[in-house]
Image (cartoon, rainbow, N blue to C red; front, side):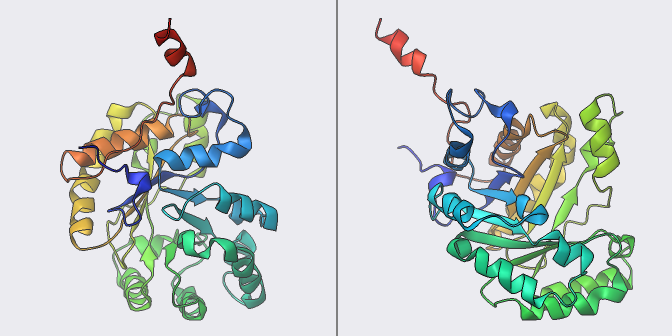
Length: 297
């Protein structure tokens, strides 16, 4: 009996995706020949069931763009969008009510498909700012699921400051986003992509804690697939536990330049399938129309 692929499930056990849906290096290996840039999201959503929308961090999309994103996906797909940088980094969540309201209103056509509203905070946002975060979270619509990514060292020191953060997130029902960049820093920067990643990506301890119902893991992997297996080990133990607890983990897979991100995401999923029963993924490599033509000869 054929099983329904992960991307077609309305209530999947987990969400698997990447930090973008459009990348030129994926042509032929992921997108069918002739796929236009505006068609890439629809193709992406045939295999993966979530994506991290980074573009909203840098600039707000037009109303037409939001409508196009909706048209390219089904109700089974779940977006995660970052709040704009001015709100999180310039205003540090203060005096931002008008801008927040404007952003939420802009994204209204996609509200039912946004699985997580992401608040990525700068390293300067520390324990003294927790009151601002608490006020911000309390002002969010109750139906919204929110994920918080912190960078301040005190929130990774396992001291009172981190305990206070985690307790506040649990109380607010907000998810603490987990960044796992260990593979990037475990090898010499022998390519331009790795050098750039080591200079720009956060190097923070990995604390595998779930503070709400949709824990998110952002995994930045090595482009050589097998080198990631050691770093997968913790997640292969933890993710099934979360699923058995009724939670819906989000797994966002990167590589230094994302050229191999689709293959790494599939590899990660296949490792998980050895430890927990999961639905199949739709094929990553598109069908080549010439294969069918050759079969007719």
